[in-house]
Amino acid sequence: MLTCADNHDTVTVKADDGGDSVNFKFDSPDTDFDMKLMDIDDSDHFEIPELGYNAIVQMPSSEFARICKDLSTIADYYVVISVTKEEMKFSTKGDIGTTSIVCKQKTFADKVRIVN
Image (tube, rainbow, N blue to C red; front, side):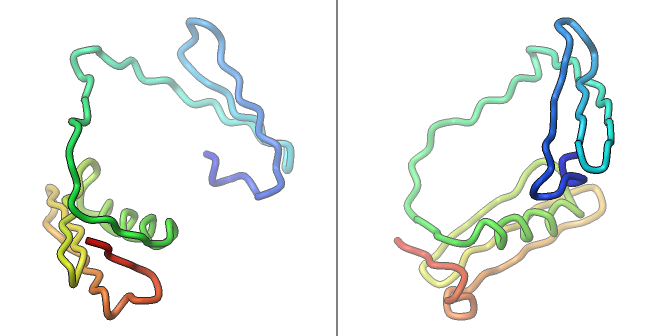
């Protein structure tokens, strides 16, 4: 819904206590969206374990977003990211297939910097 807003729009978000939806109101053009809220069971709580990482990768968020968007056509919920000194590989597997995107340091030197 937020993608409907322009850079200069004002968005008002409203929700009632105990309600089952949230309202988004855009001022230009005058538009209202109601979105139903999800009832999340506590047993479905996922935790991200603390891990140590051996690589630092610097890349524009727009490039990362593009890669994630491309991968989301195959799977909705997980991506494996592996890094070597020469490349970074994003891969996923879903019901309709598998895919991987490789960013080689030399090919993407202007966008991706791998620091080990």
